[in-house]
Image (tube, rainbow, N blue to C red):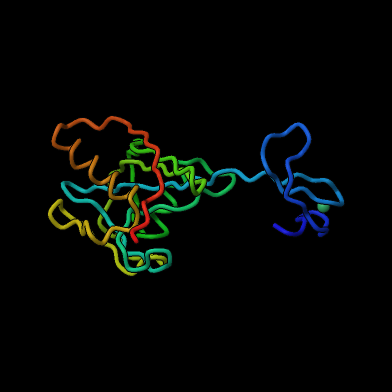
Amino acid sequence: MNYCGRCGERTQHIIPEGDTRMRFVCTQCQHIFYENPRIIAGCLPCFEDQILLCQRAIEPRKGKWTLPAGFLENGESIQDGAVRETMEEANARVHSLELYTLFSLPHISQVYMFYRAQLTDLNFFAGDESLAVKLCSEDEIPWDELSFPVVTDTLKCYLADREKGTFPFRERVVQPLAKSS
Ligand SMILES: [Zn+2]
């Protein structure tokens, strides 16, 4: 952020007085721009023994399979965001949401939250951000073609929990992937 979003003057990247972290601060109006983690809300939509997956039509990970999820909007509850994203990406209606997994990704300042949810009907179809949408049974999940580790982890937890018939809430911290040389 090189310019102030309020007055248009240059900003400096400094530690403001009384603070402990680097912030962008306007050199003119002195406004401090705080940047905080972004929340991504999504659903694990289920129908009988199947799970709804979306094939991404946009970068990053275009062509990979994912659970419907996206950035929470201002003025929106997390649960409403998860329902909206499921509608936008898969035109799928869900009900009976239960918060299931929460992932902190401090290295990219993101927090993912997935709800277990039940599909209300089977009239889903790919939204603008999806190439395709499909219901997968356990042996149909494209494990090598999943978009993000948080999606893989949520699906693995779900399948393991389903065996036991209990779905405890899970919170994890995700570390950056080791770069393969
Ligand atoms: Zn300013």
